[in-house]
Image (cartoon, rainbow, N blue to C red; front, top):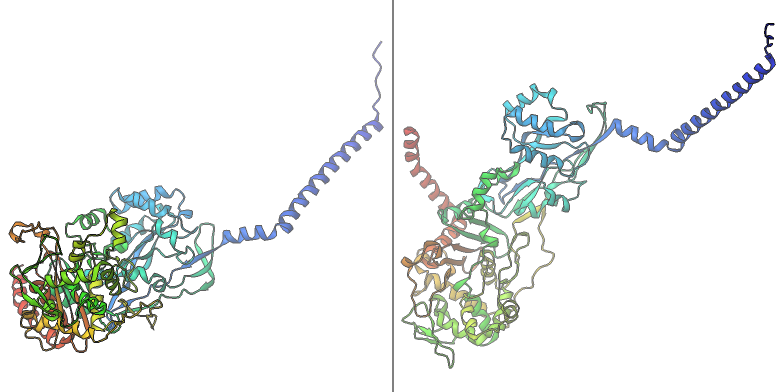
Length: 634
């Protein structure tokens, strides 16, 4: 018997289908509700956030670096300018595998493999996103052509024209104007990253460093629309940068050149000031160096040669060179003795060639071993008689000597706008106790009175102390900048003027300094004898190595770099000073015969410019035939 055929239940199937449709519809409605809710959340509640992200993908802010201010001398001669230069830049965010791109640059331009590390370091510095970073400066035409041909291999790489700092006089103003260099990690810690976005250099030394804020200017920017590959389609908004302020220095290029010529290649320093207002007229430290390679990055080998040179061209002797001032401080010691009342203009001291403290057998020698007999104030300065000043220092004592010398700027920074300046050292009882844990001995006071012993000063401090004598105690801090942005430089924290109990004491010191140059027994009378104007000066010698008691200085037994330094300070015209000068010639031995003629050449160049120019022109004409012969031989 065949099995029974089961009839299909259409109603049950319909109910099943309806339930499935209802569940599916509910599920679809639920998904739709979730999608709508998500869209609402993204499109409405987070509208500003996502619109900003979308806008940032399309619109970028590019910094516009300002043009750096120029630096001029007092006559308008450009000492630091900007010149166009082509640089190779890389935008890290657009370069993809940027380290490989840098390696390709090395290969394309056939550079040293060691340059790759320098390129990577520059790119990795913390800069703003999408900001091009220069990796190579001063591109040649051949290098630009190679980059253009291989552009397809170098995403994010561009050749840009930039303004690069240039110093037309090279080493002549390296220690005054200074230089700019690439911004490094230490610079980023102190600089405003917003103001320096797009800027790749900052002042490192000299005027460039001290007046960085004024020279740099203010950054601008532009909003640009870009495509997916980062290429700029159009500029939406632009705010122009503000150029840096121009600075006019008090330096005179002709006087600077005359001072450099006067040193004639010897190691040393020269400072010339206007004693009436503190303007620095010339500042020379020899040897010097060319600052231009530092702008775009000096090579390791070239820098090592400068750094390791025995002549130390990188060392600013004017501001950082510390030397015993020697007898150059004797006019200031005289003023201290007169004002303290321990001597009078009529005080005389007998000099047998040495000085002895009471109840002490040690002899403190005068440079003239035979002695000068009875010595008064003017002759003591003119002859630079040590015995007179041993006695004066003993009467003053170290405490008063320290007090008065500090008034003249020794032991403290005297400049207004030279941050590299050293304060030097004006020793005291407390200083020795802190430094050596020893008491101060009377004999140390004696040698301090002739500028030896622990005392150390810079050539700038010597020039300033001389300017104070010339101006009768009127303080004006030495400064390099004359105007910044058209406004005169003002000292907002001036030092008080030196007030003596009797203003006539200034005249006694000044007359004694004139006797050095024009007196019958003046140590520098040979330098001042034919001068058409009166000069007030003082010679000095700074010992490099100590000499034992009873021994004499013998230059033939001393290595050249261990010989005494020659010092000289002066101002002129003596009755109405216009210039004060300090000269230091390393290992020159004699202040009167070596440093004094250098000072005279500087004074002549400032006070007799026409005669100096004529002499220089004659010298140039005399050299012309020899130069022509050399060129013909070549």
